[in-house]
Length: 147
Image 1 (cartoon, rainbow, N blue to C red):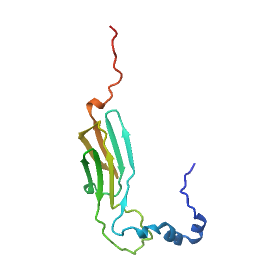
Image 2 (cartoon, rainbow, N blue to C red):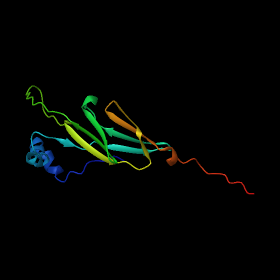
Image 3 (cartoon, rainbow, N blue to C red):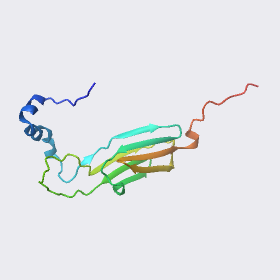
Image 4 (cartoon, helix red, strand yellow):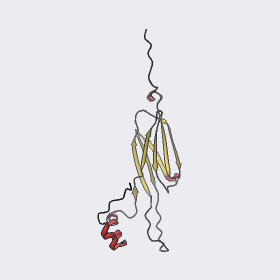
């Protein structure tokens, strides 16, 4: 089965092509601030026996532009890149990808050992590993001897 994005005005899109995109898809973007583009990167959260793993999709962001802070019990991951305006008319038909700024805040569970949080950025994926406190790791069933 193939999933397709619902387009309520699809017949008109076939008739009017790019005009449809300009009028309907980009209409609300005119009301945003032209200098700031905030995004919400997709995230995967995995819990393993001894750690939590956060994986954020942040393609095209340089790792030096990623800021990770731990304040109180919140992990704050952000990036604020100064966007340079370049206007090139040469062979550019449309440009849609542009990750300039993002911010995600995660509440850290009490079971996380905040002294053992590591971050790695590779191939557009920011991977944050948070080890659990020793007492929070389930040791499995405890055998009790009958006396």
